Length: 551
Image (cartoon, rainbow, N blue to C red; front, side):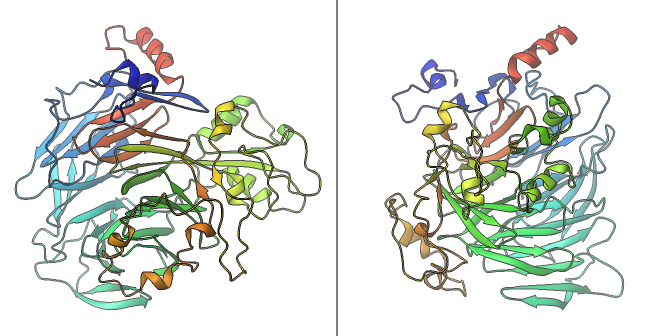
């Protein structure tokens, strides 16, 4: 279906051609057509008026080495399969579990990674009518139903996630703009809950449930105006980033229920949010067609990325390509394998030494550290974009190299030779930023136009501003402030790659160790092998299980 030679080589004249591979500085990413997951009949789903297709992964640590499991929803259906990824072709005839719902549709789901075993997994599923179900697709038991009578909230569940490090607490957001904290051990009661205020702040309030015995929800958060579209916990689980239809990113200290910082979209609602592996940066995307990078420490926008032609539906950091390196190789004591292993586990260990490497750059004898964060985005324009967040954006107060490449920021007193950290020639043509040389100083009041104009922003921007009918904050008053800097006041990122990869709007982007996974509203979940991962794993697979289907 997708293996037109022209499309594969990227040389197609048709704008509508779908790409089956793309090249970055790491090498070539290839679509594995045999590893496509979908409904068993492989028929495109008629997605009109349906909830977005979402995907969740869990590893059950079984002894076979094939512990990955995938869950996805398509329309009224929910599927649970063994995920074979880059190793073997997908066998869609044998789902471990399949459920078809009546009267309501699944909208989102999340596995508890802490409690997952080969015999049992805890899967939360949110629904369009507001309920949340806890199921075990291995034991095939429906454990519990929360908000069953819809007494807590009658609106669609937009996001559900287990609280990091907890076996029993989970958080649910709704299109009402409310968010609820539940405990799986507690009931929801037979009457509507009564609340008392725990904490109030600017455009948010948190209530506890008033009752004689402990019941769900434990907490009710009311955040912003309009729907709360998505939330994400920081890597250490202490902070919570929420994006809402009012266009605001709000970051809370989760345990202290206090607001840490806010950011406003350029216009329209924000739809998606994610954290960098070290928790220092947040990326949000939405109806302004932009990706916006926000510094957690400085509480300000540090860059915007423009590549999508429509709303951005998912943003995600690639923990496996994000890298931090000392410019002096003698700094690292250990073998190359140790160093590679350290890079691979960058996102997994909360207190790993990469953090100390990052902090070293601020010490007095700061040896240069080159850091590049990789993140990706997919949108309703059916395009996948990959982005690099580089030193010239992260540390703009330090001198930039005059060459238009990704550069390593040097110690101003004695810049050593060999400043560029990426030698691949293709990276030079796609420089991460535009017009940084005349970056405006923050304390200057007067506007300062830069080389790029606003022409690339959709002319529909004034129409989209009208979506903000209920907001208390006038968009005109936030534009040009720290909440929402003008376009010319922050660096504009260009995508490393921007490829059309589907016929329908994209709803999923997940980075795994060997591959990245995308899904579109037609119900097709695609696996893209990372550079060098196809042949290697196929040959291993042939050696160990000759009877298996090899990609």
